[in-house]
Structure formats: structure tokens, C-alpha cells
Image 1 (cartoon, rainbow, N blue to C red):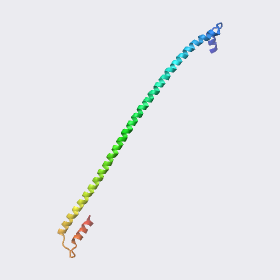
Image 2: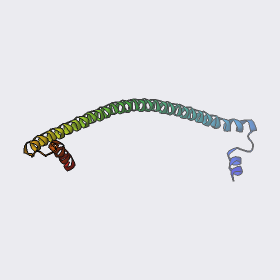
Image 3: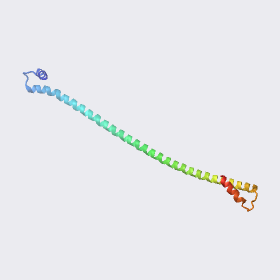
Image 4: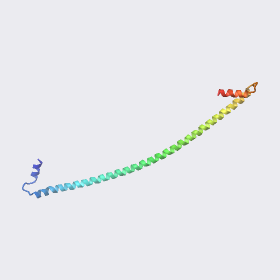
Length: 138
């Protein structure tokens, strides 16, 4: 069918050179259109590649900024945690010392009260026995 269509389009008595010229003109215009389209597409592709590269660059910059910010936050958080640990250790030490002071004060008060109320033992060791008794109770 295609060969009969082609034969019908070209008159049988026309010379070959004229039929080629007729066929070449539409083909060359099509080639020119295709070349234009190809150039446009290549331009669009180049533009898209450039946009993508710019986007990646901006994204990399943002990622770097966020990483730097996170790093700074992590450092400051670690410093604050270390300060809190130090403060808690100081608090623990202070509370322990206060507890020991209170315990010592109570022992002293207890010994003094016990000494005032205690009857003297014949061997004179009432203080030692009262102290031992209080320590065994605590």
C-alpha cells in the first residue's frame, strides 16, 4: 500500500530529479523543525540541570548550617549537663556533710542528755557504755 501511495503521489511521466526536489523540501523543513525542537529540548535540559545543581548547592548549604547549629547545640547541652552533674555532686556532698553534722550534733546532744541522766557506774565507764548504746541504736 505504501508503495502504491508513493507511486500515486509522483506522476509516472515526471523526471526523477523533480520528484526528489519535491520530497526533499518537506523533509528539510521537517529536519529544521526537529533540529529546532532538539535545540529547545537541549536548552531546557541544560536549564533543568542548572536548576538541579543550584538546588543541590542550596540544600548542601542548608544541611551544613543545620549540622553546625546541631553541633553547637550539642556542645552547649554537654556543657550544661556537665554543670548540672557538678552541681548535683556539690549538692550531694553538701547534703552528706550536713547529714553527718546533724548526726554528730544529735549524738552530742544524746550523749550530753544521757550523761546528765546516767547514773555513774562503779567502774566509771558510763560515758562509754551510753555512747556504745546510742551507736547500736542508730
